[in-house]
Image 1 (tube, rainbow, N blue to C red):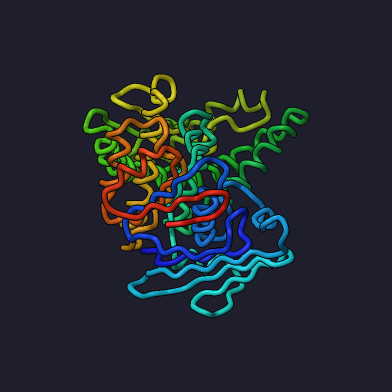
Image 2 (cartoon, rainbow, N blue to C red; image 1 turned 45 degrees about the horizontal axis):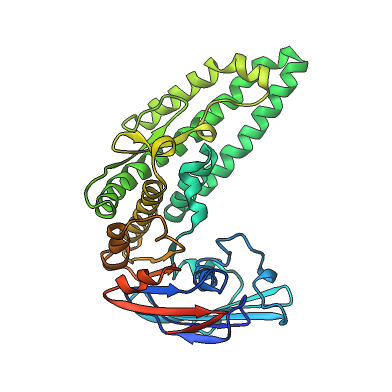
Length: 366
């Protein structure tokens, strides 16, 4: 997969232009608040139509305009293709190869990317819910049915929690709790099994990337912490039984708190560098390297599934990395088209093959 050209019109603070990126690494250089990240965001919109910064579509329009338009020429599926996104007066229009589409989801079938932004450091720094969201979103890209499992599990959890609150008022309802426990065990076991399989593959790939980034000085490990005490090699039947036992063992606590205290919605990832917790003891550079390795692994697993390499978007990734780690990202991530933003002038001088785009007050020049 490769972006051949990107055209932007009335988009954020960017001055109307068309750029032709390198098929390898593209460094987007300039001072902060000049529009570097806006370029990455524009590319990311072709993955499904949503900003990775959480911005609403009407916030993407240049201040004195009433629409924005993005066009992209790219290679996918062994052929040249084109896509267009037009947002005009609260209406979004999508075109793929000149044909109108009624949903951005059509773009996800032909174009994919993996993005890293400073916010992704929360994978290590913040709580378990951030890591679960990352894991679930990555699996959803590979397995459509997984999103349905998550939705089904969430509905059952809501119903079980409502029953727990009712039990506090009416003890006779305790006898009906096993119905929800059985349903949660069936669906929850499938979710846990899918997570175990994805973590196993991600771990293998992320270890390789992390050794490259760290100059073979560090070893990354990613471990699933399952509240039901299930293990990676357990069969789905064993996981289901362990979930049932966990729900039973936690009932007293659940009665007291009014919510379900164990299950996939409470599980976590333990990210370690050289056997030590990255969250508690890792430096800023180590934490950034660990998240980068996980995001690069996400790209590699997408490639294995689709037999096509996604585009890699790296926003402000080079800060707090030493020269050897910067060199790996700029010159040794092979076979992927990469877009990376930076502020330091020395970063663009490290690039051996590729293109440098300078962004100044919204104007992009090669």
